[in-house]
Each structure stands twice: as structure tokens, then as C-alpha cells.
Image (cartoon, rainbow, N blue to C red; front, side):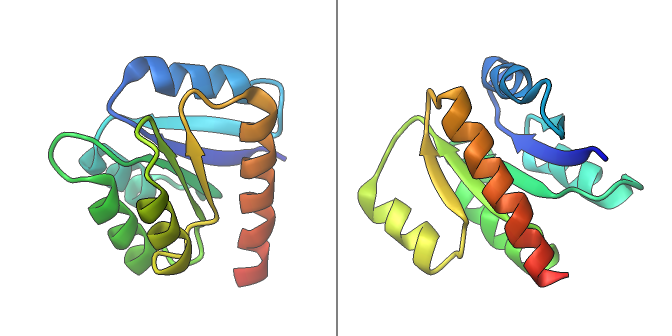
Length: 128
């Protein structure tokens, strides 16, 4: 059974890299370059999204705002932050106040990414 990961990042290269890193696992990647596309995939898609991977710095709606919206609208879907600009304070805030399951920095290694997505997918089962 395939599980679905939504990757929200404004950089096509990052979305492609994540898709390639998760190729051959039980995870199928859906891509969104902005929050509007992500909402469309979450709302209009008959398949369920098991994990959301979200960039922090994007034009328009920021990752912080996106995570807040995801937590409110899709509370059982775990969120992983992926950023190219590590910030310890922001990481702590995301982990404690925003309740994200992981905070990864770009470029993320394949094993680290797979482990984070596996852990997030397993945590989703706890909510259902």
C-alpha cells in the first residue's frame, strides 16, 4: 500500500530531489510549489495525504503561516519542516508550539529523510 507525502516547496529542484530520495519506498510524492496548490491537493484529492513536508521561506504565504493552517485544517496530518535556513529558535518554536514532527535542513540526506517520513507516517496512525 502506497502512502502519500505532500512536498510544499517553491524550488522545483528540492521537490524533485525529495521525490527521487523517496523513490522505491512505500511513499509516493505529490508536489506543490505554493500554498494554494497544496490546499488544492489536500482538498480535492480523493487519496489521503499521510505526511506534509513544508519549506519555511517561500514567496507569498510563509511556511510558518502554512503550518498553522495545516495544523488547523488537517490536524491528523503530521508536518515536517524542511528549510535551507536553519534557525534554532524557529526550530524550537515549530517543535513545541506548532507541534511539527521534525525539522530538517537542506540538503537533507536520503536516510534522514526516509526516517523522518516513516516516523511522521507512524505518528499519524496514533491520531486516527
